Image (cartoon, helix red, strand yellow):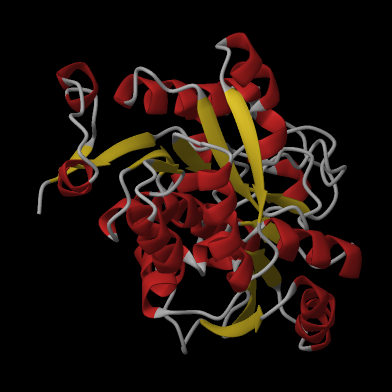
Length: 328
């Protein structure tokens, strides 16, 4: 599936509607549903870009809208929190990740839902199509296709030309047909790289996953990009260093925390775009009429300090393609 074109982006970002399109004096309630406890890092990545974008659209927090935040420590707690938001009569729900979106969809078919970070809403049956979602849901979809997963794998091999076995750190409990493990099957066979499954259900299993990776002679690792694993990012980065396994991540924050490299969508930009959807919905647009958009910018970030610690020399051909190089 190709990203929605420029016309949609312009439609979402055009200036405010006439004041008559809004209910004069109304203070809107925006629900926020996410998985994992919020931290300063996650807030900087997702909430701050979202709120900043709303401000550029002319919305003032506390005056024009209030936020209703709900964060669950586990998937099982998401549905009750989604119900709380509905009972609080929010005007729109921003579901920040795949599991939160699923919980929101199962809870309400009337309150507008804006996806913050999903994989494939069509495959999940949440929307009819990206161009015409229908129903009460729209937003961003970062679809992990075999082509996208294969590109990440190729970049890792470009850094490690003799790469033959790759460990895949992934979260198997998510109801997602497009996990990194699944989407890597075809591209790994095509380039004859063996995969080692490293499922992680909790923090303790991250350590066992690295032990398994070493036991099964994984020469590199790919880490799935989702909020569940993200809450253990520093632990994962540290374990990769301890076990001396070159690891590729989907989000740049891992690399800024000491990981080797990342290739994936710009997360703050995704939540900036989510704010554009909320703006349009609060001004009267129907979510089912707003095409689902896919990220258009994918960043390659490389940490040369980590590469040096691992005894790696990153090829110049890869360095010139990087959007960001961290050297200290």
